[in-house]
Length: 248
Image: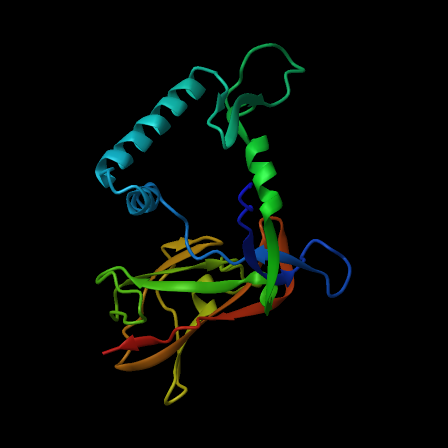
């Protein structure tokens, strides 16, 4: 008797479709917990096959990845059973046959193999009941660079890293990125505006030096016109962190 296939489920939520012209159009985004690393893979193998050591597995995987990279650098295609990697050169050669830096680029194209495509028949999507407003923009974590804490505890005057989606600050004419970040004391409702220039201002990461906030709890809000690399919003979007900042 053939064993039945295991079925899998991908939880997804909905975000606004910023490309569609139809009002109310949404697209699905898979709700993933975290990106798995080589160490995560090794730990799982050890749990299932205890005769293997984690450090040995990690080293073998790194050696395999190194060899795949070497083959690719040599211009060879690589099929590891899950992905097919193929060297390619982009750019137009209408003006000659020479490879010109900045015009032509060496890239690696990748796609999943037929094995993976076949396995995907065992997966179904399951809506988790959430629709993400703000076009999927969100603040996912705030990390104190001094202590490494990501539980909301921050150090006044020190650097924090804000990670999220579509959080890059794009301002209206005459405004500065700093003025688009505010800290609201949850008890007194007093608002403090970011003073120092931003160290990093990217769609998925903002790094800045905190103002000298007094003891208390604060709500952090980002205001931005950013939508994507080629589009800005007609009206500012406000993104408030789900976790409060705490100064002890």
